[in-house]
Image (cartoon, rainbow, N blue to C red):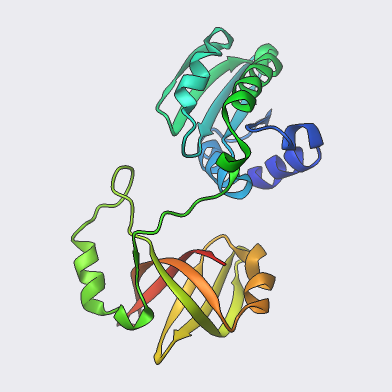
Length: 235
């Protein structure tokens, strides 16, 4: 619900949507999820995002960045607006007096607009290796599990396969995700495109030949374990 409201604030304000950083706030947004909302806005709009929950005279915020933009350094330039702040290049939090929110947005927007170029605001997916579907096996997935845990500093490997055919689906799951079966040569796999429901029409239009960026996982259902593709992007 917070994500939907944040989207509306951005899309209903052409001035905000045209900036190189997104700063949105509202009364009563749950502090526990504003960081997740900021991450989703970054994914959707391909620019840094800061989401703040206003509680009376004080607003608590959480921000997420894009590659090449040091969010903590940007906040340093606005330190006079904060009661407190901290974090690192890619994620940070802050406490701001409500009366200074507009000032904060103006300062950090000016900073971002001078340091981010249009080419910085394009979503990038880093590919670790080319992997035809014929090269996917249970053994490969077991080997990849030896690299866990994945997270900051140890990202889950992302692979690339070209000219992949969608033979079933895509089917929308919970209004957010897409489930499909893909095939390349004689090998086929179930694939999930998380939070990608808006790409359904594109996938259907190009179902005969898609390039996939994906990671691998195991899915266990009724005692049977199979390899599944988690789709990072399609083109």
